[in-house]
Structure formats: structure tokens, C-alpha cells
Amino acid sequence: MSTPGQDLHRQLRITPTPFKYAEVYFNACFEEIFPHEGAFWETKLNGTEVMEILQLLDISYNRDYMIKSYTNPKNHNTEVYHSANDPCVFAFFDLYKDPTDQNDMFLFGISFERKDESIILQKILDIYRQLGTASPFSYDLLNKQLYNKVFKSSFYFYTGNYAKYDKQIIHHNLNTET
Image 1 (spheres, rainbow, N blue to C red):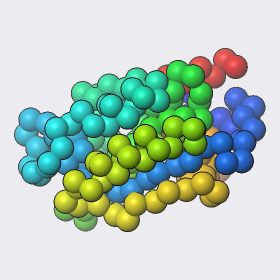
Image 2: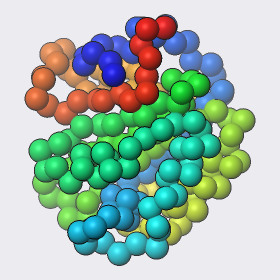
Image 3: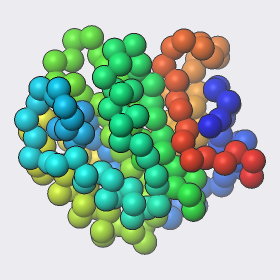
Image 4: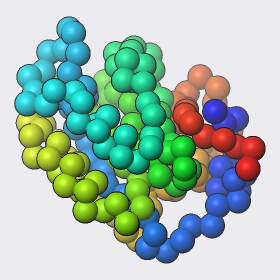
């Protein structure tokens, strides 16, 4: 886990390689993608689809922790699970809950190497097509919206001062000793 408020782009000395990575992201109903006991939303998914994608990318994550984090009304953090092989390959879960949101929406995204594009896009679109509630699907090759949110945290989270009890970005499986 990283120290809050640090810019990982500089800390890890990452130099983005143009066109090596692609990103996909969309907003969806949390309970549709992660069905669980006590969920109110009906879903066509069985809850293992995200895990299948993350296993392909060598990203380990804790499904129970994700559900516990989302269902905690005081938690608005963003959870980022990095690949064991490449910190630029990651799953992005923005668990912010808008007080007026009646659809339990969250932002879900994946950054992956383009060499894995066909299988990742197939699997993520299989999930997306079964959702009853979702925002437009975004494919990003140039703008790196997720990269900027994850590695240039001031871009998304901080405005000069790091507020300890506000929304935070939590990195999992990230070795910052490199």
C-alpha cells in the first residue's frame, strides 16, 4: 500500500509507453456485478466474471473485502488492485456513493496491455451486455483517464492538501520499493 497523497508516477519512476496499454471503464450497479446476500438488485451475472478477468491479468483481489467496503456507507474510497507483473495493469473500483444515487452505481475500470486486448474486451463486454443499469462503455487508448487517476493522484483526489478522512485511493498488490 502506498503513502496517501504521494504521486506514484514519480515515486515508481514509471514512463508510460504510448499504445502499450488500453483502458476500459464504465459506471454500473455494484450489486449487479457483485451479487451478494442482502443485495436488492437482480442480476444476470453470477459474481465470478470480474474474478475471471483479473486472473487473466494476474491481479489478485478480495471479493468479500470489496463488498464490505462498498456496503459501508461511510466508505467512499477508490480501491486499485495492481497486477503482480506490471503496476500499470490494474483493476479500478471507485466506490464513491452519491447521496442521490438510487442505482448503487460505482466506476469500474481495467487497464491492460494491448497484447491481451481481444480476450479482455470480449470478457468485459460480456459483463457489460448483461447489465441492466450502466453508463456508456469507454475504451481509452490515448487519454489514460484511469492511469492519471491512479498514478497522478492530484489529478483526481487531492487539491493541495491531503484530507485524511476524505476519499482516498487504496493500492493493493503494489510494491513501491522499486
